Each structure stands twice: as C-alpha cells, then as structure tokens.
Length: 271
Ligand code: SF4
Image (cartoon, rainbow, N blue to C red; front, side, top):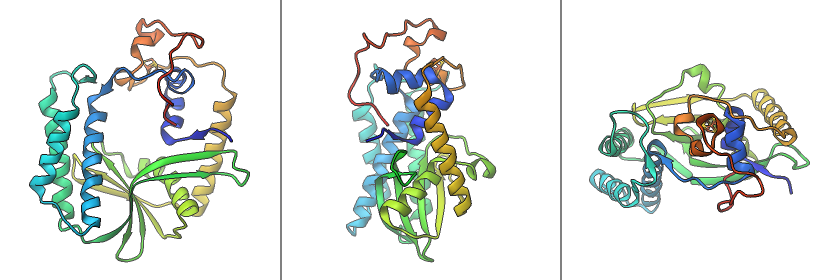
C-alpha cells in the first residue's frame, strides 16, 4: 500500500524540505506548539461540538459556547509547550481571539437553520489515480447541503489573514477535499468551497470546474513523484521559520540535526 499524503504534508515539502525531513522522515516529536495553532484547535473543537448538539436538536446558547471554549482553553494551555512568537501579545490576547472568532460565527449563523450538516470533522481518504498509487487524505471541518442543493466544503480559519479571490481560486486543500467528497462519499454536487475567516467575520467562496480538478490531480501526482524521488532535504528559510517546531534542530538556526539512526521517533507521524 502506498503512503498517504495530506495537503499539510505536501505544503511542508514545498515550504522547507528540512522540516519535511524532520516531521515525516525522522518523525521527530513536536516539542512545542504555536499559540495560533492552539487557538485554532480550541475553536474547531467547540464548533464541532456545537454542530453535534444542533444535529441532536439542541442549540446551545451563545454564553454556553463561549464558556466551553474558555474552559477548554484554560484546561489545555500548557505554558511550557505553547509558544507565543509575536512580540507584545500574550495569552489573554489569544484567548480573546478565539472568543472573537466564535462570537462572529455564532452571530452570523444563528439560529443555525440555513443548511443541513452532512459531515463534521469528516475524514476522507481517496486515490487520485485508478491504480491507487497516489493516496490523499484529510479532515473536512464541515460538509453542508444548502437549501438550493449545493454541497459546500467548509473550512474554519482563525488567523487574521484573508487571501485574495485569485489565491482562493488556486487553493489546493479544499479542491482536493471536493475530489474526496465526490469519490468517497458519493456526493455529486454542484459543489462550493467555503472558507470562514472567523477573526475578520468574512466568508469567502470559490468553485472548481472538472478541468481544473483534473489539472490539480496531475499537479499533485507530479509533486508526489518529486517527493518520492527526493534524497536531499536542505533547510529553506521562509516566513514560517519563527513558528517552526523543529527550529532547535535546524542547522540554519544553530541547531544540531539528529541523524536518521539516532532520532527517537514520536508516535506515528501526521500524514
Ligand atoms: S526553522 Fe525554517 S529552515 Fe529550519 S526546518 Fe524549520 S522551516 Fe525549515
């Protein structure tokens, strides 16, 4: 069975091969987590729970949603592990960032009866080719059927950055998920890709033609071929280095790189 690739695995290879090597070849355990990722996880888990309740016919009050988020944030915040990179910002700022995201989302979607949930945190795994040599997997925040019959593949973002429409029209992650939703779950569309930029209270959308999806499959299979053929993993300085969980091992930052034979792998790595 061939290895499975996720959007994150592909992006890591594109951004920095050394990081790819640390994470997916050596499978080094993360010794820290950026606070932005931590907030994103807490917001995602609360929205997942919110829709589970709604699915069972019970809509939690806004105050309950915020209380649950704050409780999860405090329970799971480990100052020895969570890294705050941006100068002048602190834990309280990031806790409130999550509150802001959830407040925007709740107010925008209340009373949560505009669409039908088809999947929450839905795992998809599917091949890009008929022989099954190029396997992709991912987790979709929410799959939705709108009142006019459109299948939406939705993603929550908690960062402040909102990409341009042309960037979203090129986005790989949700387009791959659309292929998975059609092939694995059997939905026939029409499809819409939806991003909720929660911190900015903005919702952005895009669509993909069948030709664009075919093109994407070819590009991703070519990238997987390149990854499989790669034996050299140089460090590539980039604008995510400050958030890199392997900085202490990175040669560009004075780290001592573990050898393949001596690295202590963590639990099975992410795909
Ligand atoms: S710190 Fe930067 S250059 Fe070094 S491994 Fe991480 S992403 Fe790559």
